[in-house]
Length: 175
Image 1 (spheres, rainbow, N blue to C red):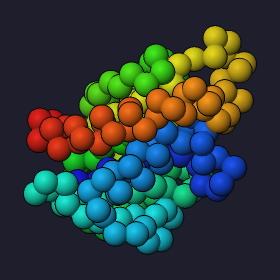
Image 2 (image 1 turned 45 degrees about the horizontal axis):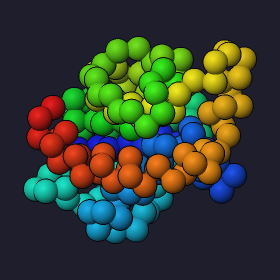
Image 3 (image 1 turned 180 degrees about the vertical axis):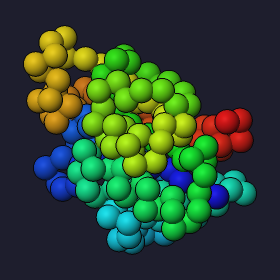
């Protein structure tokens, strides 16, 4: 069993924010692989289904970004999912917009959602880092990640999400 986590903030005001790229990914996975509607559980919303032959739980913590670890830990504990079978999809300032990088373990890179997961669950989970670019000044980071994607960026998102969604079976098989 695999736990796929998308980081973001709950509420319509955050729906199209850069920081909600992880939530967008969970929604794209749920739709593409015909998972059932989300149910509230573990201070988040979950949907369980299969990607190829692998049972997967999709989780969107609704604790707000900074407390995501509580939700992830609760789901891991309930389903007895090992840390190496946890995949966290999140935005990353240090990667060019719409580029994707994978890694297992490591630091949080200043990402508060990852810090929370690290504290609650450990660090040896898979990170699927979705680039959003950097605003250029550290004082602009918070308003930048909490701002909506531009109109031009919004045109690119479906292509990026679709490409990643179609590769998730390979990611699960080869990691």
